[in-house]
Length: 217
Image (cartoon, rainbow, N blue to C red; front, side, top):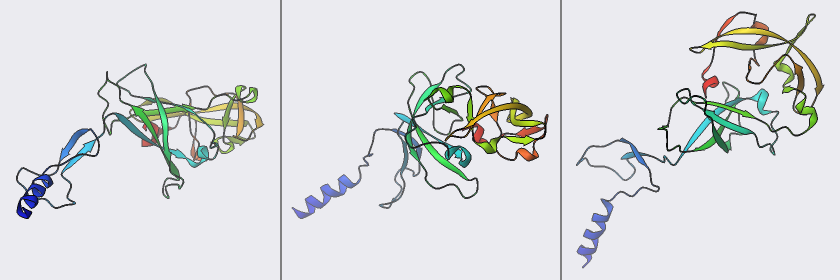
């Protein structure tokens, strides 16, 4: 009887049960290969939702309150004129020592009409809901995102982006009040501008720059 019980148990050990329903993305062993108790057999992916991780610079992270609920969307180059809403999942509370950015993870439901897979390139854009009339008057930026000379205050944006290369354009801005979120920019910038927020002292009008991977994540 003990031998029978042991044999039944050994047969049970030959069955692999996944902790969740998913798709096998990679097989790590061949048929009839001996495996150990902790050896990877398959890589299993849960395709019911997609997790998107973006790196947020500390100059922007410091302006976000814990109670903020930004509207965040994902966009794919191969799916034009469509954006997919994202929900907040988690945030790293310690910056990456090299890039000084904070990893923020968002969750996106699977889209039945498109075959969106892990590791695909995605652009993430977000905006905070307007909370009062003062914020409605202009764009709120960290003060260090602007540069001031005897000619006035300026911001640098990237235009004519093609194959991760773009042209720097200096824009004259007028500013308003300093709020708890940053400096209010009344004119000179518009929604969708891609703003340079670091290394402005090295920028010049018409310069060609290469976009980092963070622009596309």
